[in-house]
Image 1: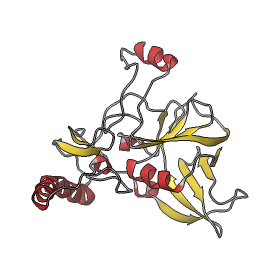
Image 2: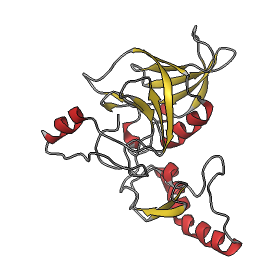
Image 3: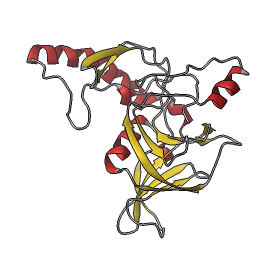
Amino acid sequence: MGDWGRERFDLGKVSTHNCKGEGAPNLPPGVLMRKLIRLLPLMAMALVIGVTGFSIPSQAAQYWDTKKREWVTYTPSRQFTKTPRKYKRKLVRYRTDEKPGTIVVDTKSRYLYHVQEKGKAMRYGIGVGRDGFTWKGVERVTRKAEWPGWTPPPEMRAREAKKGRTLPAYMKGGPNNPLGARALYLGSTIYRIHGTNENWSIGQAVSSGCFRMLNSDVEYLYEKVKVGTKVVIL
């Protein structure tokens, strides 16, 4: 679940178009060139991070809001934490009795498997529920959402209030939203498989029961999964 916490810089959120090419503006060459020049500092920072993994200062960035049909400027978080290599997306051999297309969440190992043909699966590193918030079961994907809004349940708001943190009744979707770029809703539960703006949490047990993925990973999985997909939580 999208827990309230420190925001982290996620290069996956800096996007000038969506995956399907829908809704992106038809820009004149001159304007497009200025947009690309504006992204050059971010590209340079990405290179520095990839080589060193060091923290970097925040800068203004933009993403295209397909609903508002306009560029939205936001300030990325102040620090980017490099995700361990073992949690990078990877096609692996995977033995299971589940049919291809099924999602299997292995809470203990902190991996999500999207079952493929011929004994393989696409494996993703995930963040899972902290002590007292893990669960097991079988659900179906009942809804999909891009840049989902977040409505913290009353029990979460009350729990965080005791810690001196005030959560909003609702937070609209966007780069600073804890649910990240995409969300897959599980059955009639309050739980989701969703992105995150806290990359440091991948491989950790920090959520309230939801399963976190890197934004780039959840965007990739989102395009491969249909409503009705079986999800097995181990």
